[in-house]
Length: 114
Image 1 (cartoon, one colour):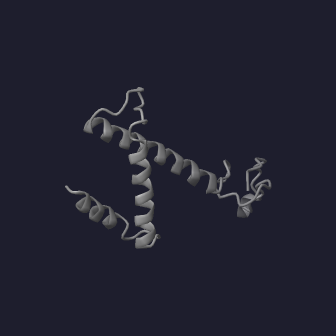
Image 2 (cartoon, rainbow, N blue to C red; image 1 turned 135 degrees about the vertical axis):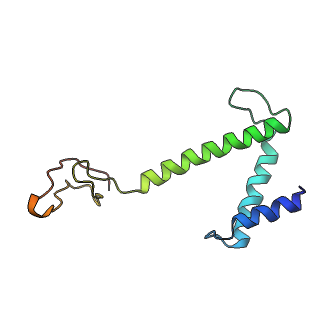
Image 3 (tube, rainbow, N blue to C red; image 1 turned 45 degrees about the vertical axis):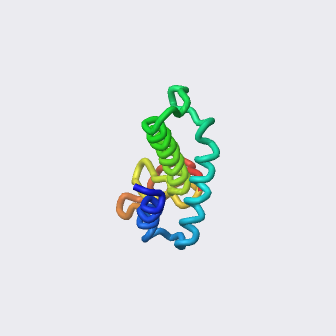
């Protein structure tokens, strides 16, 4: 696979992206430029320098794992918390007090972040 083939494949992955084609290519260009500038200083999880294609693939997978973990943290920090008693989303930092119909209001006293 040539660089041209790889970029074509990469562009195909952004087809349904909220980014415009130009923005997608800009992000890819920045990432690959930074990767190229950093390749000789990157170290694998075990502390070893990048020595060959296998190590290059390994560091890419390690970087993806770090990005995925950060994505989960971002999603979790923006998702509404849920009441441990009744399970509905808390929309503010107030006590729950959700109207549960004939069962009255939820008695949850957990203050949650807004």
